[in-house]
Amino acid sequence: MQGRFATAAATGLATATAAATGLATATGLAADLGTWRADDRPLAQSLAAAVTSAVIDGRITAGTPLPSERELARLLNISRGTVVAALTQLRDDGWLRTRQGSGSVIRLPPSLTQRTTPWSQDRGGAADADLDLTLAVTAAPHDAYLAALTRAVERSPTLLVDAGTPSPGLPRLRELVAGRYTKAGLPTRTEQILITSGAQAALTLLDDHLHQDRRAPVLIESPTFPGALTILRRRRARLVSIPVTTDAGWDLDRLTQAARTSGSRLCYLIPDFHNPTGAHMSRETRTAIGALAQRHGLTIVADETMRDLDLRVPPQATPHLAGPSVINVGSTSKTVWTGLRVGWIRASAALITELRHNPLQQQLAPPPLEQLIAIELLGEHLDALLADRRGRLREQRDHLASLLTPTGWTAAVPDGGLSLWLHLGPDTTGNALAERAAQRGLAVSPGPQFAADRATLTRYLRLPYTATVESLTRAVRILTEPTTPTAPTEPPTDD
Ligand SMILES: Cc1ncc(COP(=O)(O)O)c(C=O)c1O
Picture (cartoon, rainbow, N blue to C red):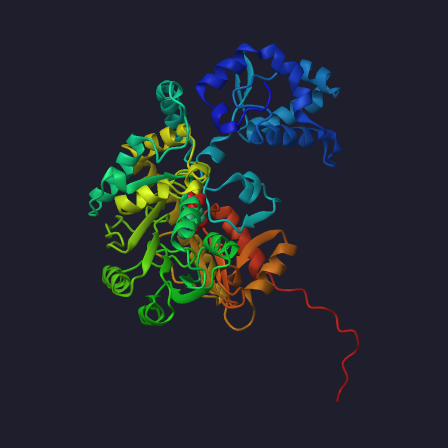
């Protein structure tokens, strides 16, 4: 079976199709594996690695039955012993399911489907893989997502009789999102919700619509989410930074002063489990900021993408940052999966109407099928899904914090979010450490990437705890490995 996307392919439907086309699969397999012999490892290992790569990138789908060992050896022009060794490795690693008398079938290993760590962060946990800790993102909740996908497909026929043109969002999804705000204590009508293809799309649209006077600066946090910086920089926004730290939270005095003196009309904040610090805004600060915004004619865009990643036990209800001058932005990216491009804007019904007439809105609306999936995931199943994710993230966060304790670097353990914001002390900089780590196969994000001026926050590093306990252990080992002392070029003298 050729090029299907792995997640969709893992449904029962794909499995049945693959089973029905077993012979075609056998002949296509050799082509699907590509030039796997180029590898300099033993042949059996290379073959096993080629099969896993082909499954991950969707050339071979989960559910595909494998030809017999003899047939495979013939197709690939290798010995049967090599095939047996490769299949044994694949079976041991969970990539094959074998039933007595009915051959072997490709599958995704449960170790991959049951974790929060994206494949590309550690190539599935391979001991020699490079580690990429630059993104604070999770893999999809595999089984829950596939179940939602199946239910969404079952509901999709009614979509097809309509035009499918971009809209403010499917009515049921807008209703569901509005209901979530109302339930959390912020009464919201369906007309106050606009569905977008993620939070960054929402920020792009809001920046375009609200930031008309480009001479007026935008107030942002320092550090802040680099995606927001990219959007603001592209439109050459002048930026004024307000400090935020994990422990002390938002510098209200600086925010008040900036609101009073900078001439700004727009302020971007991440009040819930702020990226990268994990800071969580207190009720008092929320109230104060809501009032401050109104007093100074400042529109606050509150990015609540991280809101559901509350790792406290049990999670505690916090009011939304709210008020007539506050626009709330949300997303399914962190709650569920970044690959599901569904987010939203909550604002006054009048502003939502204006945004609907902005030409960008049509380009930033998600496809209807994605919205159906979001409906399934944000509904009754969400609590169970979140409980599972939070448990894993909590364990990984605590593990990472314990690994860092002996290093002398400090990071307050946040109540939620996806990362630790590590202060490195006077001996090194985030850039130097990131550069050194990169040479040892670990990619990390240094502090300046989170600063508006790219020049401050030099003593910081963001470490996401989305990786597995094993990969986090490897990452900290790499970060703390002593540098090899360079041999002196001249013998030391006595003077
Ligand atoms: C604060 C914040 N907002 C938005 C996003 C991304 O949102 P989306 O994927 O919905 O565009 C991120 C991702 O890291 C984030 O940290």
